[in-house]
Image (cartoon, rainbow, N blue to C red; front, top):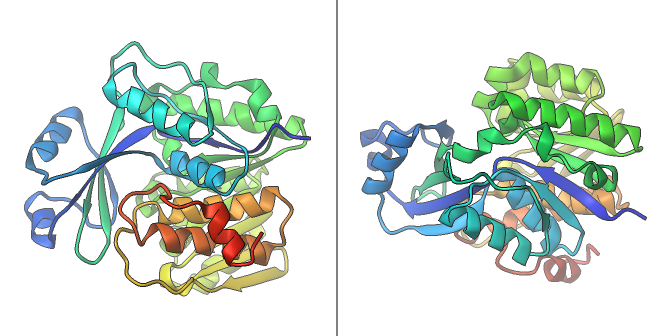
Length: 330
């Protein structure tokens, strides 16, 4: 019996979400649809120019951990915050969802990370992230007993930016595999893939990572191709299990010679795409950790992603467990 279904590791970030038009992005030199890393000075500037905003605990893997808990699975989270107001907000929010979170906070400097997310009328989100305390995550923050007792350890590709986090992840992978567990990565962002392509491929080919999550753009970036099917044919050779999301076109799951094409769910309106990939991973990993067939795992992912893009913010406002029950996916 495992104590946790999934352990998620990532950048602990408080999201500050506001609506804007495309002209605002242009005027402020924001790359639409991307995660733009910024320094403290630019963070202050953009915050001063934001319209009315919603603050919500976020961070890619944190959103996934929240989604897994909403499905009724047992999730844990490692991520670094500071002992400041945003750090307290983040810690309270994730624990209130039932997620195990016991990473020791910093004393106050640097401050807790925040991401200013600008949502355009088409629902696309453009993230501007000041990492702050995130970069201080290191091997000393790894709770070995939690890693050993989690069926799957899942981490963000974004963690490859701060160097000490790499050491923490490699330590987790060693602990997980020593205890017969599996590891998983989300490639996070096409620009992140561009920065760390060879390292990500090595993680996959060496068996350090068992399961890979990517969207279509990230998969194509990984193999430097414009051909989606070519990327699929390559990724299935390089890892045990790959899951590639395609927005309204659903997702593709490959394991060896096995392939499943999963439809997206029908939705009323795209409100905010923030967290779509994170919640897809939550649904898939919830199913996977509980022994569901791969096609059902994919349908659980599509359900969670489809629901979260119809609300503002990256964490589910309705019970995903109830939604799965209504959809006949329990």
